[in-house]
Image (cartoon, rainbow, N blue to C red; front, top):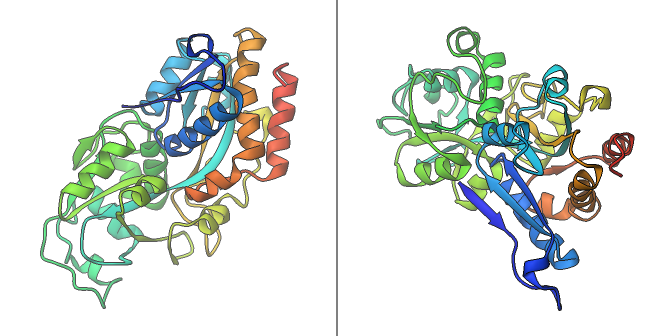
Length: 329
């Protein structure tokens, strides 16, 4: 678990009297929330204590009313949000990438290769299914070690949702969720745990949010998309995946961005979401909303620097109207 506490003293502000907002959940947006929180503290003196415990933990904590906000990459369906009296809104769009530990740049992985690797059927890097799309690469006769999440994870939800759409055998045998019955692999906790394992284990492959791959200097694969094109993860290809999103406030902005059409659409994209308890005092939620409104106004460059896609202005305005309707803005 990574825990962020933005601490220190701003001007004459005593730390003991500093306002603190507590949140927990997805590790997917942790690098960005950490940066936003640091800048927000410097400007306002308000501390954000965000614990990167995975989406499953974030949803559980806000359902139990033990934090000010929860965070999840797996959006709650409108019926579930209503059942637990929760509001939900997105913050940014990002991508889950396939990182690997091989001295091979720009590896192209087809849908069938990815499916075979994570089903445990493709066991070596020089398998014909991988060689077929990488005829010019030196692929070693080395065992593939799959690294996947051991905790309840929104990153897992995005990745297995993609696999369930792209690979009928995966859908039939495994399905998707924040936790699944993995056919193969070594479990690690958090995006940071998976990234660290990949870094250490030669011949490994795993799925992480893009910022973690960049932070750890990991190789990332080009992935075959719905149109049969091999696309690199980037702000542009994540934007292409989100191009058709409706972002409907009446459905608590429920939107899934995996396996979207479009020649440049990255197939394993997703938004990350904040969850608020509607039965909290309005002032309590206003404090959380104030932070994310600040991030929407001043945090886009920080998001882009970490390869997340900021929400379009019209979507931010929809979210502000949603906050306003709940009396928090």
